[in-house]
Length: 250
Image (cartoon, rainbow, N blue to C red):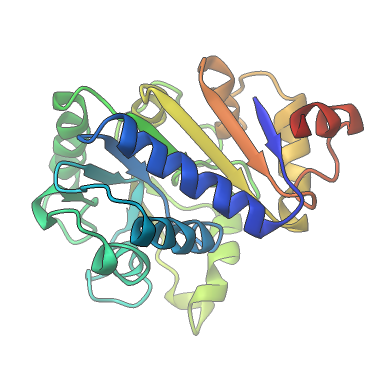
């Protein structure tokens, strides 16, 4: 299902309401969360909704998609730091219910196994929030990642490192490896919300629309899932068929 809205603000409000609805429907919701510039306004609107909505978050559990290997949690570009700055420091979820991959784990392979196991032990994710990279990655699952993958260590592609270099003072500081939730972990979520905004995402969204499920384009794995909503602003949807935009707006 496509949901095409005009502006980034409308996209962010829609996604924030979906997060809130998930918690209202199930107070012990298991949420899969994402990072990146696309998610910042989503979390801002979500926090705004919580100020005016009487809902307890004491039984909510969260799992983040990914983390750079080698960055301390306090590093300004770690995803742990990002999540606390943009969401967790203002969210009433107990710290013990917040889960992020450990980029400084002494045994990263074991840490990956434990992470997927923890998600599975809770019955899987109720709602997974996703962004998409310009090369089609979801989480840090780069092209040619096996669709049956669990949480694993990944060598970041040159394109991903270039795209993420804008967040670092020097391109050489961008980590070369990360831990990411696997594609199968994502596909086992009950609902998935894929969000893309901006003209720079238009080509990959067109590629995704026209693609079959193909490991060369990781996000195409979502075509195998029965409950995916793809939420776009008009710029990200610019290269999609015009009739799709009309249908999605209804």
